[in-house]
Image (cartoon, rainbow, N blue to C red; front, side, top):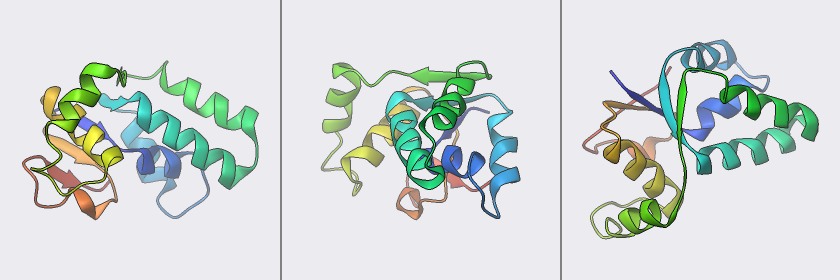
Length: 125
């Protein structure tokens, strides 16, 4: 089973909230995410904890985990744009969803309900 992990899971894993431990557990498993999720997570974590160095270390730690990071490149963007009319998602979520589709993910781990009722099942930690 391959999971795509959305930015909100990464954010909650590294900030103080009621879901922190559940989200940290997800990051201990094998998963796929993309570089756009890491950028989104970094920006939010910086804002929440007001510490760029710690936020940087949190994101860098994912490179040492059992995580496959898919780069946002022109091909991924093009594949996402081909799906604009099919899915009612904003461009960020569409890039994440397309990443999950192209990498045969069976589930998307996220708290974002915009991923409900799509071909890939949305789950929460």
